[in-house]
Length: 436
Ligand code: HSE
Image 1 (cartoon, rainbow, N blue to C red):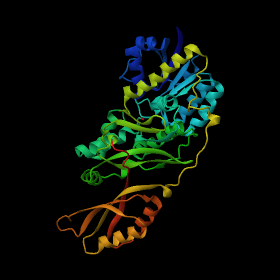
Image 2: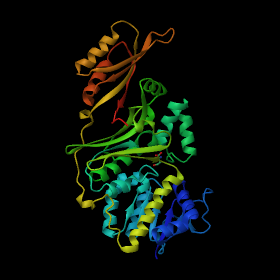
Image 3: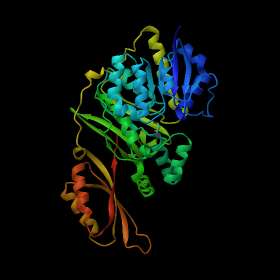
Image 4: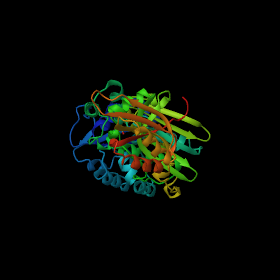
């Protein structure tokens, strides 16, 4: 039996999960990868009472793990992109394999790190970086390798889905649910990226890179967060037969790509509309397999650690037979990745939900529909709530027909000049997908 010694850097939510899995399943891990896969060294600034590290070498300086000559694989679980980038770079330069759960690091610095790993002939694996416990990286890189992928779409931030679900189903406040998501270890240490869509955008560009064979570009996706979704919109969506999900969408159209993350109304009878709580779901559409949907926990200690351990065991198996991991990190060697142009946001067509507060007087709706139709936009559905007692304004919700985003931008600018309008127009995208 060959052996692989593991050093973990970071003992937060995911790091403690990996230690707990090794403590509980060490024998099973060794048996299943026929490798004496051993957790040797843990680097963390402080202990974590959620796990027992008494069997391992422990260092307060995480770089001690990288410098440990006995460590073969460094597992980077500290998050962030500054120290983590140095750590991973040093590990690769020291000839060590790297496993990470760090989506920001891979999205922002993956190109340079993958090239470095290829030169050093070491593996760089990051199954846990996207969708927590769902093994989507391996599926795209290996299981679907014979397919031409036309689209990947899904719920890829657990915190965001947990917040939207609790707000919609339980009527809880955003702040209250966010605090619980933090306590449960779903949210990032600084949850800004969960809320403003950056975390999902990082994950989407990783998926797009694997799906379409393109280099990583952290800023490629049009990005909107869940912070624009109000309880009122969740109520209207429900009334109209939709649920609201924060989606990442990567679609290939000819030789161009549409990449975006944003809150989305989805008809409630679609499978993905009913994926709730911390669950994630990813749909892949590809020429040979057709459509597949993978669902599972998108965040949390053990689910994410499960993916880290899967990578480690995969490496253990591969390195039983070879000195080098032969699987290219992104499915093809990095010098074979090909950049594809992005479809500009204003050229992407779609259906929209609009919410407006307008004066309750004759002619106002005619003005609004006139401005929409002047831009070639048809109204598919319109709902008006009766004015609150004593109010001179009503809330109106409109579902448009499919429209080019740039035309909608122009129509909204026009509508926002109307004296009858109070505040600005709220807009959310609608995606219907296929019947479940
Ligand atoms: N904060 C992330 C999420 C963790 O909620 O999805 C998993 O990447």
